[in-house]
Length: 180
Ligand SMILES: [Cu+2]
Image (tube, rainbow, N blue to C red; front, side, top):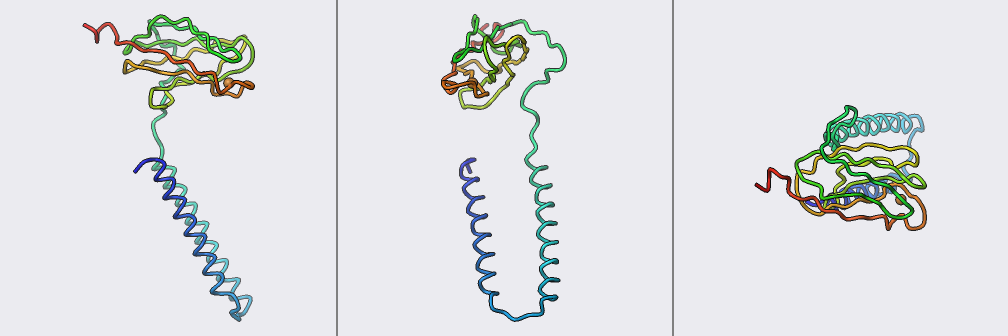
């Protein structure tokens, strides 16, 4: 099942649940009962619903946890390749030679004007790493590309009218060991 399908299914289940609650309320309307008895049942129902929601939340949160997708950045990792990246309204200036797969590359990211978000995406649109691009500050993002191919840099922070156009495609070539 695709991600879109599972969202669609979840929506359908949710809509059905709400519709069933409405039907139940309609079916119960007009019944004569002691208010205290109704209140006791309502409180009991509320305990079950909220208890169930909390339990469901814990289970869904636990089941959907994934390892953090971006390599740890808090230690100074040696990177044989260094690429300097400057964000501009509205394009990326990248002084790149070819980037080699299998060898760590350090992106040194800054901005010439306003804050931008530097995000690296693979051909399938998966985010591989990201850093803030800030004027006057250079952030270092180390990433090792496992596959040669086409990649893209997108801006992840709204930076003005043509923010959506800040897309730069670049190539990652096979590393030296892989070519031989
Ligand atoms: Cu932007």
